[in-house]
Length: 157
Image 1: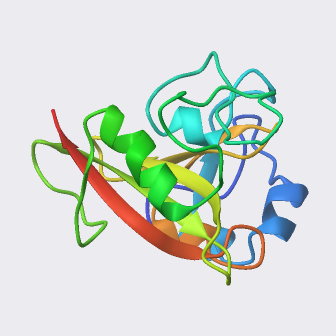
Image 2 (image 1 turned 180 degrees about the vertical axis):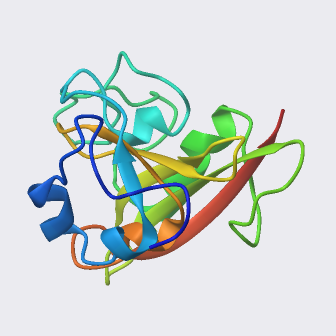
């Protein structure tokens, strides 16, 4: 396990649901940082919004900017994050003066999840309707649940 995280929640217990969903997470290290909520999702959390659920659903049940097509494509997620000041970059390594986000995609290239890099270089993710977690690397979430990195963007702070 990488230094800094023990793979346990604030209460000192490992979360078996998180451990099962993300096979690499214990080796990479994580900690739970918030209770479960359905007030926001990972797409919003990546841009530090904790009051809306962002998703480009066809029925319009969730928030999505009206000038971006309501289709879950990597291009549309890139457009979303550009509205919040992010630009495409080529790696997820910590960079002084920048915040970075990652959009994960499944094997078909469809967006599944987004994570935000913290100023410490670690990452934060909102796991669906579940908790927020802090994890050491983007690799912690690789696998069947979220896929792999499809897009990395950064914003100057």
